[in-house]
Image 1 (cartoon, each protein chain N blue to C red):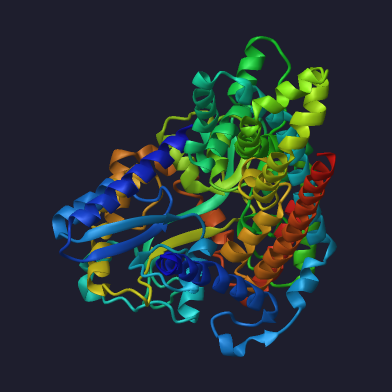
Image 2 (image 1 turned 180 degrees about the vertical axis):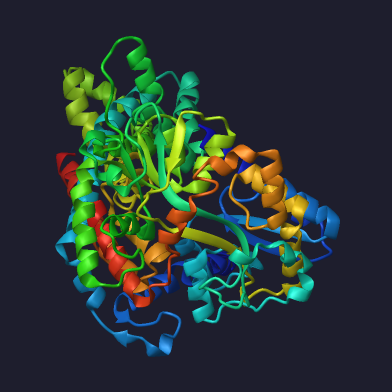
Length: 350
Length: 281
């Protein structure tokens, strides 16, 4: 039900945005394309008020959808928010504009450990936005074992109570990690093993979903599900005390979503102003507070520690250093990704 | 006069060519090629993606889609015909009101309605909470094919009722009077007069339900928990996630061909029926 409300509000906001666009004929319109429910949208109004630049805000649901839309051409997005492996693919395909940091003085607030990551070693193209992990969201009333390992997703005890993600990388990654392999494996034998493991899991799985997992777990429709740390934080802020989030001790995927400017952008300066605005300590704090995701912004981390010290105890907000060391960032798989796609199709159709 | 009228049709023809004919040829083109879709010059002729469609995995997906579409069309027909009959026999004053009540749900976005069914049917959803509260056993259909069928029937039922209702309401009342004058009771009147006369409506109802049902997606993902991927889901998957346009295109072509065959069969039935009707007269 909540989801529906959110959707209607988004639609209403979009209509309002379109109407306001037609009302205003002067000035630049910045096309911002972001994940659904991934930005405090009141900040957009604030940006418009501050700069007079109109923002046309739209949403996508997965990295793959974003890449597909960019590749299909005909789009003119100015700021997009892909994750690590999608960024490295976009860099490889020469689809991004290098960022001029003179226009982004607030970049100094980004914690050094989020700079120069593998997918963009010199930070030529990307500015970190949020980061997090993939883990297991669970209902404490329905699960009495500790949720600290991928094994629980294969536990017969929870037959019909497990939700997996209809996402090629996440679901196959969980199986690979359970087997002790890399989530970026391109080894045919390792993937064959992961496929067998996922096929064996099918009878235990209630369903394969996308963003719906959060609401299904919160509603008690299933006991546990694979999802992003942000979903757990979202429920935490909403006061769902019976919902927990475990990061498997074998390690998981750590992701970094960044702001980048596609090559097709016609408003690079304005896009950089937008990125700079999003890094402003107050704005970034408001955004992180509203969305619940962990920010890479030092000022935000500082203020969160003062105002909400308890969230640093939560694995969803601040995962264990040890587990992080065992975790991996997704890499672009190149042509090998068709293999991953086939495996997921086979698992779903079984 | 005739000429000016013809000119009025040009925008539509241009529209058709740009947005229907050209894309169809593009799909056909991509389905028979392989290579980087962004470099059209590098594409080579290939039937690779059709070979992939013929793999047992995808044949099963196609089979499932047709089976589910067939069942949901049959349910729609069984449920929809009596509804159309009832509405058509209602007093003129209430007819449009009844029809409107029936159509109100489709004013709402189909995705929203499917999400609403999700919160109704889910294991801990409204229906189950109600059933548990009054001590009845729970309804465990979501996720599963039963829930998918329910979602399809719910979404497509109006498309069955509308054409049947239209045909039924146009049947000349004098024909029915003639039937009873000649000694036909209600059953005979129905089986020998009303039913044969309503076949064109039934045929277009079946087509209008079967087509969206066989190519549906989202419903199977949301209400079926993604466990019975249908051909529509596969096509979406290829274009939006896997980015394999060649495979997505050949799936679309196969779907189109199969739909064309089903439509040809349906129109043959319709035609035979009309000829028989002619003979009887």
